[in-house]
Amino acid sequence: MSETAGARLVLLARDLDPASAEVLRGLLEAQEIPAILSRESAGSLFPVNVGVFGLVDVLIPEAKWDDALQILETFRGSEIDPDESEAD
Image (cartoon, one colour):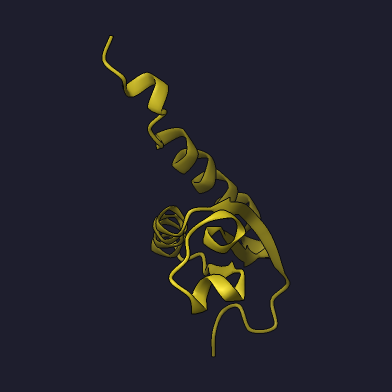
């Protein structure tokens, strides 16, 4: 049985692109925090990654909130800022 079965799920991150959501889920699961990705159903049926159809939410069990929030903050801090990566 899944660790999320019967657990109250809370939203950890909203509106990530699919690749970022998968990376975050991998980081969470590596720390034994189950994560569920949720997206607009039309976005999963059609090959569309534009607007709301391309965005993904990450849900985790409420009991894992504190640990998951630390991972999210580290993840967001490690993302490359396009303005900082440009050569002068």
